[in-house]
Amino acid sequence: MDQAPLGVDEIPEGFTAAPSGEEGKKQQERQAQIESILDQILDSAAKDRLSRIKLVRKEKASQIENQLVQMAMSGKLQGKITEKVLCEMLEGGTTVETKVKIDRRNYGIDSDEDDNDDDLW
Image (cartoon, rainbow, N blue to C red; front, side):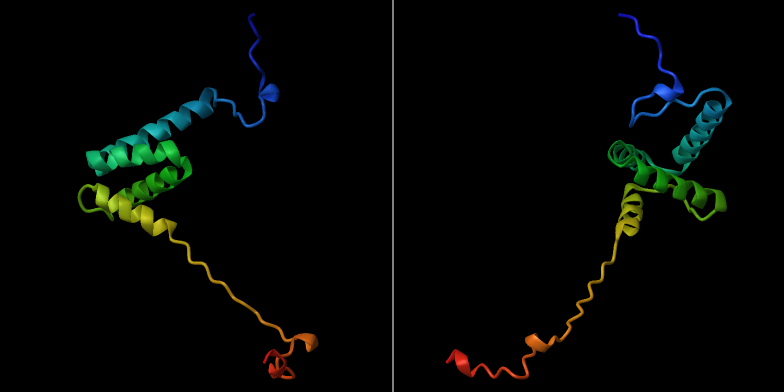
């Protein structure tokens, strides 16, 4: 049962086509540059941690990688990034402050001014 390869228009929903040609080559080169920079700025434990994060939360790992590369390019890094510093970066980016505001409105039938609770005794 040999099946013909699927065309770009025939790819099932949820799947993406692999980049081909020049676009794929540029993407591979960019990824190789990022990996090279990360090898220079991360110690081995931090690299392992980042690779495990990439397995579970690819978007988050990509965001951290880009942040690290930008810091390295701008000269803001002093020495290698340790696993502890990487964890602090991860925690710093995930803090979400939620604020709940409760707006109580007085309605005519809900008013407690008229009710003195004498009927409860």
